[in-house]
Length: 323
Ligand code: UT7
Image (tube, rainbow, N blue to C red):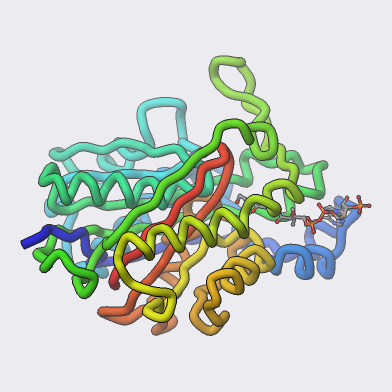
């Protein structure tokens, strides 16, 4: 018998304020038409003043727990994927732990930028499979609006804030690809590409900094690497493309999402798309898409999902799982 990390609950939180593309037309040399046609984004949510990554993470986590019919007392560990923590330390995860009222277990952050949720899922899966935890809250939460250079039209129109969470539960499986839960993980990074997507500040350089991106270059890497990592994860399960029910991609750009689906020979009807409503929420984008997809009746028990992401590092990866 094998232990599998099964998604037992999912939830999300989006800040109240919705910002349509037209709002950027007032301050920047840009148009709603450009943003929609180049990225697929129509609107995004921005956190209110004083609203932080941990606040949003807690709300998403509470909804995931409710969805799973569990309480914070049932949770052994919390992993938060974020590049925009409330403070440099302690971790956002320990702040979430306290706000949930958890007094046992352990909590830590994972930082792999837009691939953060994939890395966090991979780590949480390893904790469960190795017997170190039975129930793990995996959260992606970001306030990327706080990293924007509002004079840079090539970046500030693309990102948004939000949080999503899943509750992973250790359940018995047969060790084959019919099992529910995480079936395979594929993680990659290549630090030589640091300069195409980064924040030009940090603690040890004593600045906060803003997000900088050579969008065209990132785009060039994205489709190829996302298709390759998805195929690699799928191959580890022994299944084929024909077995995929859903692709749940990182939501950065509809053209990247379409290009990757095409390369994988998966029709767009099998792809969960939320980029039009959320923009790029970095590590929050996949759990947000999982939660919205489920609410829309798209992800059903027993279906095979491949979820994939790429971001700063470059760091990228994919997880194949049965819902
Ligand atoms: O989540 C992490 C991973 N990040 C990504 O996946 C992002 C990857 N990159 C992208 O999504 C796309 O490259 C962008 C959406 C960022 C840009 O789309 P593009 O088709 O690659 O456009 P481009 O960068 O080649 O720019 C085309 C033109 C440029 O003008 P010139 O040089 O052709 O005269 C830009 O200056 O569009 C201009 N431009 C804009 N025009 C109006 C750039 N931003 C804007 C804007 N409004 N907001």
